[in-house]
Amino acid sequence: VSVLPIFTSDSAIVHQRAQPIDSVTDEIRQLAENMVETMAAAPGVGLAAPQVGQALRLFVWSYHGADAPSDGVIVNPRLRLRGPWRHRFWGEPDEEGCLSLPGLRYPLARAERVLLEGHDLDGRSVQVQAEGWLARIFQHEFDHLDGVLYRDRLRRRWRRAADHEWRTLHPEALPQWIPGLDGEESDFVDS
Ligand code: ZN
Image (cartoon, rainbow, N blue to C red; front, side):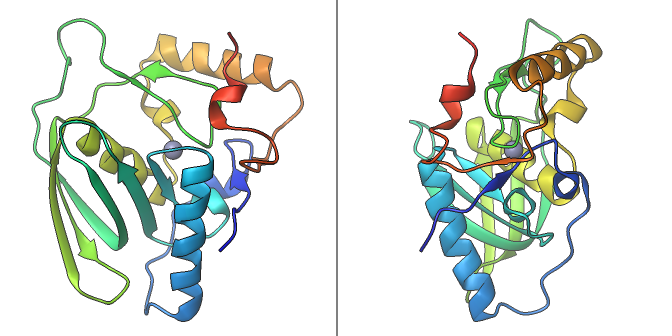
């Protein structure tokens, strides 16, 4: 099991739509194991295959918040949004971060409840009802499979601020980083 380089917003692959997985081979299982290891090292609560350079519809998550401790791997997921949108009309939404935009945190409204469906690595069907932070994680990771970063969904003023902060943090392009070798995601935060 090894920690993989994480591709950032400066890499084309995280902006591309990923392909469905026809069959779960040993290579896919190995990829999923390495993704879990990489997510733990980052550390992060979710990681999608395009973020480690594989344009495949697969993501992993590990969320141990108070409301819904949950770990998993999902292949070819579908996601249904079940609203309401948290803080859509009142105040600022919770802040999100992304291992492909290390160091950034910006507020983004997400659906409060979702239903995630797909398959596990043994071909069994998976159905997870989620709310709150876990629902946010699923929406974030699912978007990665369509080449969408949370930055793309930010309100205009936050999107501008995010782009500016990214270029300030990384004046030279940062196409990828390696958890452990380059530190942890929080090390990129400009404080
Ligand atoms: Zn992300």
